[in-house]
Image 1 (tube, rainbow, N blue to C red):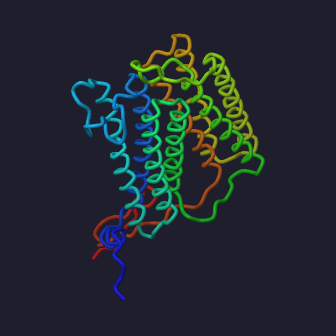
Image 2: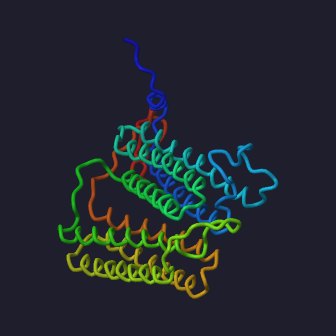
Length: 332
């Protein structure tokens, strides 16, 4: 029987990327996921949420923005086009994960998960426009982007380690404390979307956009309460890791998280006491991505799966790279 044509297998037969390349491709997915969140925030903060008033086209008669739509149409359409850039970056990561030797199916699955999250969030983004920036759909749009960022970070982390069964580096109660930190941080992000949905930046100045019927200042106070909870859990985890003599990497990750939280807290207070200026709100959204990445890195650092396998050089004339370190190839 003839073999089934598989484009990814055809690429793998001709190209075996190094572990370093796969790791960098996964990191590029993380970077693009953050960019999508920040640019999506820029659309809202520049009142360009309905710059393209319909979807999937920009207007009823045009795929692209028309001159009459001005800068708002350009901003909204540019954000849509960045989705294709994100798809391309994730596509490279999928192909690299599939083509590397030995084959790493978990990385491939994480890559495809990102692809389907991008596709589903594109649909949610379309519904956001068609519903006139319904705040609940806007919140779902942001949370789906956060889910994408989560998978991207996991793939980035997994690309730098092996595929052995996970081995805990700390005792069970410490892992449970890290789970509490993750849950509290996730709730912090969710409450932040409620602040956005009830706050002053509705996303479009030309239309009366529906808002979540809550006092945004009271919701902001709840958001701040969760900030204190996350900071407290971070400090507690640091002391616990020192007490149990945990490896250096998890303790360093906790310190990194604490620093990011402090910087994000400063930005948040500047935002609140200056009536939420657009630029500061945008920086705060970027900071929220960094906080979530730091939380995930803390959680993932508490277990290990061994080192990534070496990638053989296909011709014997080049170096393979495993885990960021060169591996000598045989010479002829």
